[in-house]
Length: 414
Image 1 (cartoon, rainbow, N blue to C red):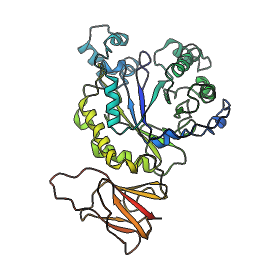
Image 2: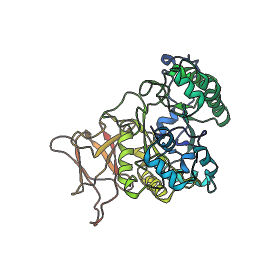
Image 3: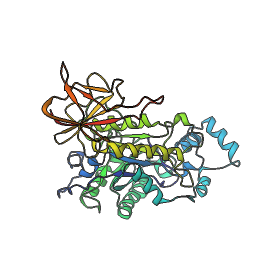
Image 4: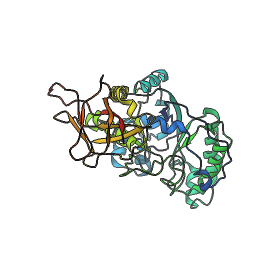
């Protein structure tokens, strides 16, 4: 899973890019059942946003080794490598709770984080909260689990009071639920909470939730669908969905044993974004700060690279909709989005002859083609078979490959 319980409610959050606020939802009362809750329209801001930043930051950032599942691997599974790590680095008898005072956040600069995320492509930031329903070692949860979840001591005494308090105190526009898979939604009281959230909470008109609200709910119930971590559908889904991905391929939280080869490169990051948005999804990219609150330079560099790409090509991403064709039928390197009558073709590889062949658009005599980031219109001609051949601007030869991803704007095509 993307993230897990820590000793206490970890400082994990989501920041979503919102290009426009969108209209508020029509007033209606929702019943505490999935038929009613699933009928709620998704607030417009979420679909328009397209790009978000996920932050995993908690006590697991203190050992900062292996992954954010460190506590479970160490004391739940008794993983030999984790036990060896603790023996070498910490005094005998160390417990997970003793890591907490070292979660200092001494260098946490929230304004700098916000500026970084804005430079990563955010025009407006909306605040969301991650919340893990379960807690691996909470005695109340373990007792309910032992009773096959026929009792709800953990839910009634700890989880639900905390969840209600978080909403009332912090008023998040997004709740990213997790840790649901061991018990059904009736144990978690999920539908009752969501009915209150949609009907009476201070964020009832703007809040968005995901689909992790009980065993079997994922990809079936909730607001947008995660379905699975790093989920990639093979075709256009019927329901709004999200692809959550992490810059560190092995972890969502910071780990000191990360190496450069395990960090997503710029091309892979842009490919994920483009493919996700073309298929109607939102892209949620994760970073894990250190225990002091530092987003390490390699993560900053990747976020800024994404921002530079969006500075040029954001018109083909933000507030777009899937087109009638999502990708060229001859290649997976050309993906389409649309905005009203305008179609964008985003190509991930620069053609060697600087001629882009598109078989899906049907041009007309009035068709105009521009390349985002370049001035002027481009010459094009009808393909002898179908589609169009677009002559791209000349690029000087270079021993290095060019950046990944360019977008042509097609006006007057079908």
